[in-house]
Amino acid sequence: MRTSLETSSRRHQDQLGTLCTENASTGVFLRMSLGASSYLLTTGLIWSIYMQLSNKGHDILKYFEGCRLTAYQDSVGVWTIGYGHTKGVHSGMQITQEEAEQMLLEELVEYQGYIDDLVEVPLNQEQFDALVVWVYNLGPTNLRTSTLLKRLNTGNFEDVPNQIKRWDKAGGKQLAGLTKRRAAEAAHFEGKEWAN
Image 1: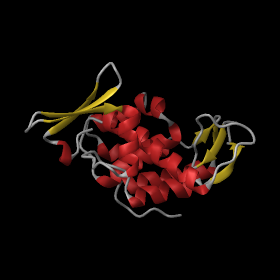
Image 2: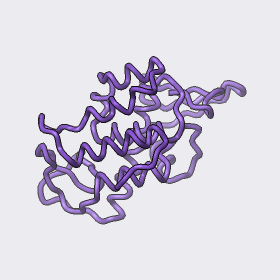
Image 3: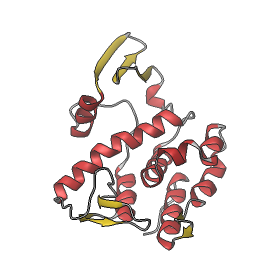
Image 4: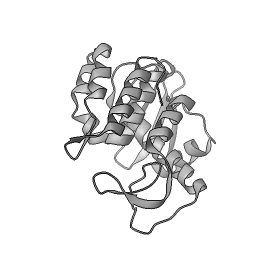
């Protein structure tokens, strides 16, 4: 995805898993491991030229994910903790609120990256937020293979809210909570207020 801030910059990842940033006007490269760059981004020690989830985007994500400090199984049986964190979660696991916030910050670097990598058209902040919140819930494989992404990358912004709303099922069943979440994401994509 190219944002207005990226007009003179590009990012690519080489085979060694190193994040490379080149400023086209100066030809200066910044190289660091992905782990180090994630740490620096999530702690605010470096400024990113890439769009990041806004406060409104955080509000939507936190509202719909909720935060649980004890591991639980979601509607399809996946062990989950914090704000929808699923990696390495097991029965009986417990975390603090601070750990939940840190997990979310670290994961957002990854999920924002999926939007940066897969979306080929410029987005405004609300559109970016809606897509990050959507992919955080549904995962990158669903985004990569979706009609939503195909339509968006051809510049068909008008159909994206309808495509967002289609994804309101878990385990083949429509869930009222997902229908409400998708409606909020679609409204935010359009720059409208979302109802909670």
